[in-house]
Image (cartoon, rainbow, N blue to C red):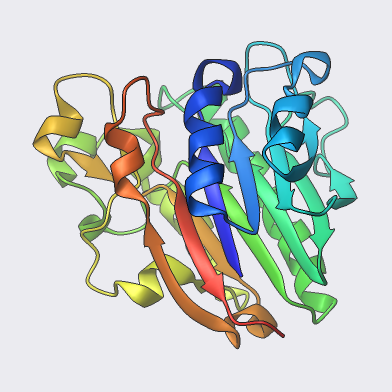
Length: 258
């Protein structure tokens, strides 16, 4: 079972690339982020034509998350996180597919630092940690997949110096990620590549893709029961190099069948 996290950076702009990816790779579950689409304009028919059922939590022009399942309809469990009734941003969606619980996560970027956007990022992280704890208590196979906007380690970035002042690498951001993982989650890509040096994002600016100046911010975390089924993890890097590609590459984990 291949589960993918894919920040598409605008689903309408990247729809040909997404359909191409679904047709070529045939992943079982795909968690999308940064749809930049309202619920009404989500391209459901195109995705169904590609053989995937879908649920989505859209927001016009910003954010937005979705979960796709091959030859199945994801069963929605939760949209949005508790703890802030004034939060209207579409960043969390949770579903069940074939006995597996999956969440599509688009954590706030947090720049500039310091400031209200960074405070929102840390507060959102706290709410995610609370939800993750509740999911672990269910003692089921769970995958938390998404763009966390956190570079966890120095070897997860092309240049520590270049990103030192960015919200993605602040001590508070890293500490929040560590608190989440320490609950009992397995960082699947880190497990597969313990020495780092694997990127999931390359900026459009300054020839980052051509220079391979990237970093790792897309993570798939596994609950203990999911980790027991871990087979492999990786990044489908070549899709970042295609015409009109997202600035993220599809990042995935493969689980053995239960």
